[in-house]
Image (tube, rainbow, N blue to C red; front, side, top):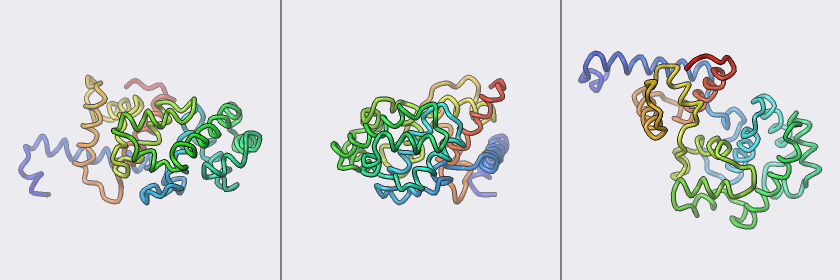
Length: 240
């Protein structure tokens, strides 16, 4: 046991160890970052990798199953449509075909339009680079607004999906947790039931992650696991 733990009251030691067990369990059961699962390495900060994750985030932003999103992203990957230039070159009809092959049928028309609009805006305003967009933002809130302004239909959920995995990679990426995260954290005993302030929830989750001392993973992995746990709770309609 570390000196830090030895200097803590026994009740706090037990609480810290319990939360570490919970974090370990969540990661083991639900896995980590979606970007990693898709083979996207956003940690290198390369514009092409960041854009791949943005494309995937837009797909995840609709109310559609994760399996369909994953399959649809693989269709884009297989066709080499992984850049603003490639999306614009493919055109609306071509994008609809790719979306349909992935099973993204309910949202194919409006998603094709959204992808074209965001790619054009990204090329026109930021030379096709999301890193340039990030650099131009004055703070985290401005960053979120700039991302949403790229196209109609890019809303809070899509931006949250995108930015939460860029925490620690982009200095201005620090979105507040979604309700799904709060509910999963509450259900698993990580935060108390009477805590609803999202800034406080985020602070507590970061502290929990720090106390857990996990190696080989990032806070974004923890948050992604909580997202999956929250979705499971929603499907089962379990009380939180």
